[in-house]
Image (cartoon, rainbow, N blue to C red; front, side):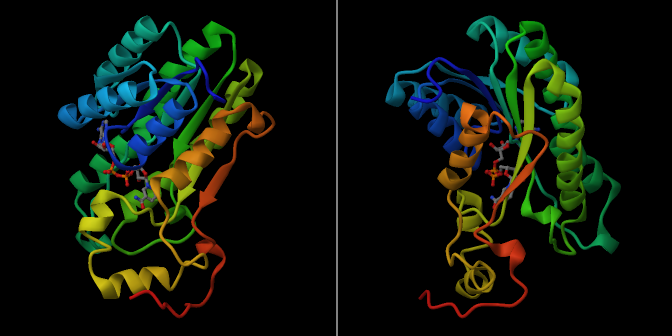
Length: 261
Ligand SMILES: NC(=O)c1ccc[n+]([C@@H]2O[C@H](COP(=O)([O-])OP(=O)(O)OC[C@H]3O[C@@H](n4cnc5c(N)ncnc54)[C@H](O)[C@@H]3O)[C@@H](O)[C@H]2O)c1
């Protein structure tokens, strides 16, 4: 129960990685606020987590790229939970198109939801934490795309690179308040979207696996364990870092034989 009584905000927590993290924090005794645009999924997740782990878990409908929505949701969380100790800014989207075909709308959508949201939610929560005077931990969701990317996800890669840079800047600004700020950069995580699209095709699965030394895709729980560590007292002397959770992928400069059927 490493997080007993801690008040944790998770954006994009209605499904996939965000939901796995909400569960992991609840499993360790935290009370969790989920902010997301998916109302049905978010309410269902909050209800199931509260019942399963006996903690407070509430859903707040919030578009994290819109300042008025962020300010209002975070004010509600502070009122309902009595404060915030941990923020995991996880919500993110992608728009796939070759660089030559990208539209301004693609660019703006991704930068708004992925990068601007980290500023909006991060600043709102950090101001509260600074005022609260008890320190805190903020974890931003980056990606292994910062280190190696593809031609079809330029705005996504740019947003994630921006998140890692923002994380360092935030960590410097917030250190005097005892607020640590770090980021996580997952490789390929086996979420429901990946299962249904990218990784459904056997050849594609093999291609991706041939570049992962640990020879398996990541699970939501692999990410959740690292986010939990960064939020915990065990990481008390770590701030401004991006930790990559990619099964060794970013160090590999060749492909591996895959035996998976
Ligand atoms: N799945 C992977 O392999 C992988 C790898 C590296 C990084 N990531 C990052 O992890 C995060 C979660 O990705 P996922 O794979 O779980 O995807 P996902 O699409 O299943 O989850 C993203 C969540 O964010 C929510 N969201 C989207 N736009 C929002 C908005 N404007 N306001 C509030 N919530 C919003 C979605 O409704 C969803 O619940 C993303 O930031 C993604 O870039 C994922």
